[in-house]
Amino acid sequence: MRAMNQRAVLDFLRRCGPATRPQAVVDTGLSKPTVGFVLKALEAAGLIRSAGTITTLAGRTAPLYEADPGAGYVLGIDVGHHYIRAAVSDLGRTVVARRDEPNRAFSGGELVAVVARIAADTIAAAGLTPAEIMVRVIGSPGVVDPVNRCFRHSPNLPGWDRPGLLDELETALGADVLVENDANLAAVGEGESGAARGTKVFACLTVGADSGLGLMVNGRVFRGATGAAGEIGYLPHEEDRPLHQRLAYTVASVAAVVDPELIVLAGRMGSDEELPLESVERSLRSLTPYQPTVVEGELGADGVLVGAISVGVRAAENLVFERWVAEN
Image (cartoon, rainbow, N blue to C red; front, top):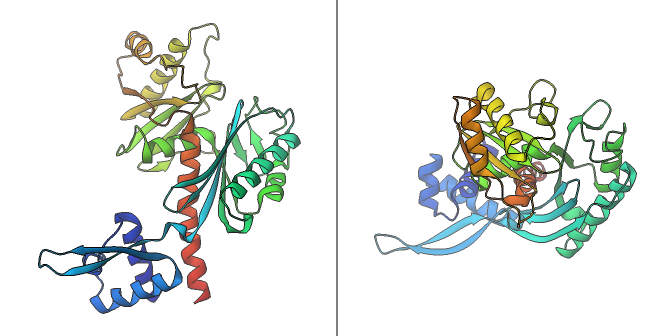
């Protein structure tokens, strides 16, 4: 029961930001003495911190509390065909260090080594040690194969489908590595911090060398039976068609099957390249009577990285609390 009360107060502060004890009482339904005791325990553990004071309507001064973002750190890595991006974030999703480098690896083993080096450089730039990183999240094209321990369907990353590659990544980075499809992470990013905020059912179509589709249903990634949902690279299409026509065909296919509220066009296109949104919409009108709302992503090339950090923070928040409970 004590752990449940502690978790309720901590989750409230993480969700709502700086708040007073009376506000925590109202939200959690716990008694004033219980909330007061929990706040003291969480603050002593370094899970929450003082956030100043506020003057109430009655003219009294009340202390504010907030979840301490420095209670843990996560590492997000976006492994793409052209670039590798890495960032260290605290639990408040504030990036404290970042590295972006061209991907010049020609084999799976070489790419693992490059990813490990960039990860180490980013952690060092944040002034942290590897032991202080609670969760590492890697986004990559392809489908995670838990049996052969590799990525399937990632032709732009040579050797990435070699059996045992995920074990090599864990050896190089640590056993706390989470691996996820990059389009799924882009969908998480756009759903939490980008163009799809507040949307229950939407699709995120990544555009670039590593095209893919992430599907979100009620805040969760839809993976399909084997994790291959959204592998649109295997949809039949004519390669010599202009980009906007190929995108329109994909959007039409997704709209007919999934019926999303929104389709976000995102990806790793350069900042000087514009997504052909108007051309896609014109072509779409000639293909299907289904006309979903199509918008450009707000996160650009950072969508996968933002999603990786979000997934990492959620996992780290649970881990931080579970470790503290186990120690007490």
